[in-house]
Amino acid sequence: MVLHGAGRAHAGDGHALVLFFMVAPVFTFLLHPLASLYSRRHEFEADAYAARHADAGDLVRALVKLYEDNAATLTPDPLHSAFYDSHPPAMLRIARLQTLQD
Image (cartoon, rainbow, N blue to C red; front, side, top):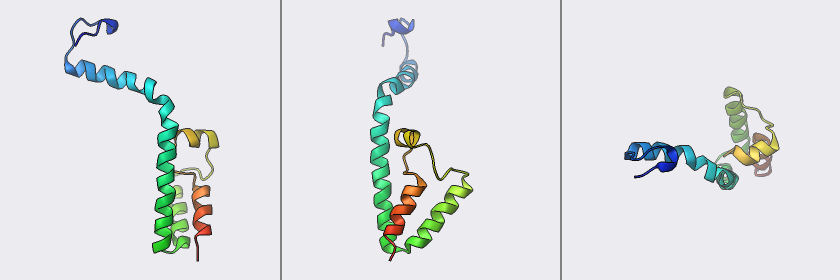
């Protein structure tokens, strides 16, 4: 493989792979919010499934404990969360689980 733009006349597959992984985020940056949205949608579906098969109140308590143990904020910045987070904010998950309680 010829990598003239990178200052290399000939490079092995290892060099090309490293270069690919360095350049790929530049082109996939704008796809990140779509991937996060897709992941959050599945997380809500998983919560609904769990609420059908277990007590939603127990799930809420487990979710709060998980966030406390991980020292994560329950109220992240909405813009940052929408762009980067693969899981919905805890408060949204808790609100949805509370609507599913019997």
